[in-house]
Image (cartoon, rainbow, N blue to C red):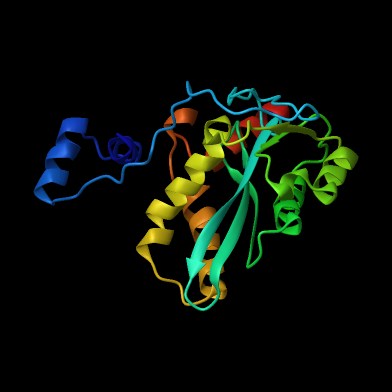
Length: 226
């Protein structure tokens, strides 16, 4: 569907069946991404935490609802490395990310700090994360408190509560990480940067935002408030 949409938007008229026929002739197959079952309910939240988002992944405008998570990326020389990402749920754009060799609160915070550079006022933004120690740390919570960002948490052991950022990391791995072997973190960092900035944010269309790219969606939202 996305290939068909992209071709038509590029001025090449075609139908979905025509695209499918050509893909079969060329022995091309789409990479399938796991679909999250949003109806699954399990896990609890500590009494001092709150699931503000509650799987409502729709946002009326940018800088209203964000989500964040950390994923693992393997490189040959250093072993496991880590990517912390922040997504705006209105545009589905990755607005902040940080990559490093240690899964720390500092890494998680760096990604959020970069996201905050894109908006003049962070007051009232909902940031959703899991209950990982990086996100419940005093360092991370203090930053959100001072920025007046509302912290929302997934239930324990329930990735479906943070499905959008989980989906992004899954797509990143299927379209980039699993297709390459990185010698070291420097090589992986360059590949991640190019994937997010050159492809995901600016060229990869999303059905959830009417087959626009995240950058196109953000540009439209910025014009609305200009």
